[in-house]
Length: 91
Image (cartoon, rainbow, N blue to C red; front, side, top):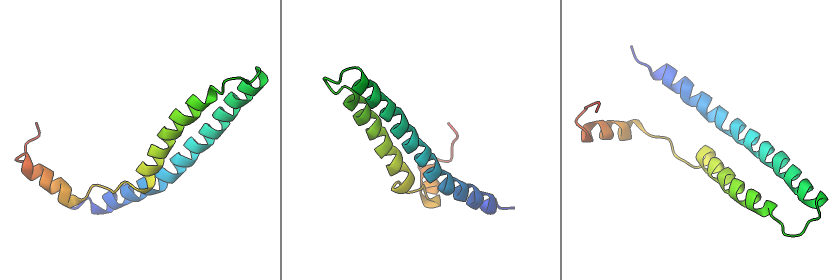
């Protein structure tokens, strides 16, 4: 018996879950960094230190977006090739 229907179902769930997880990450980024900017503003401004958080976390957000929308899935052909390259061993 083949696992293809379950594999297709799991792949579909991953494709649906990816954008939802990204949106949650984006909302968290906006709310948290909005509060950090508010703290900066209320404490006298000066050097815009929130830029460090915005930039570093923003890079993580960009990588998350790449993973969700642009990274191609691993194919069965690649899996078979990897198994053949390692002689089918588990080690």
